[in-house]
Length: 105
Image (cartoon, rainbow, N blue to C red):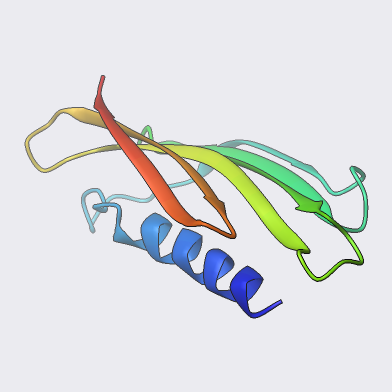
């Protein structure tokens, strides 16, 4: 279970590391979806903000009840960088660590 905590913290750190938009701009959520009904060991959520930032994430518990139990997370987020370009980060996080791929859109 210690690895699960590490994976969750790694995903949160990546999301927080994304550059933020204009600090004087009021940003609102324009679309949101949440689905915790995929089971006790999993979840799904997505949202889109008025500044164009987007995030989507799905997690499932693998090998439940065994010594190899681990949370497997896949997701992505998009943001506009200081250079005005839009970046997309696709990632997976599991017992083997956090694995991001960055794409310029």
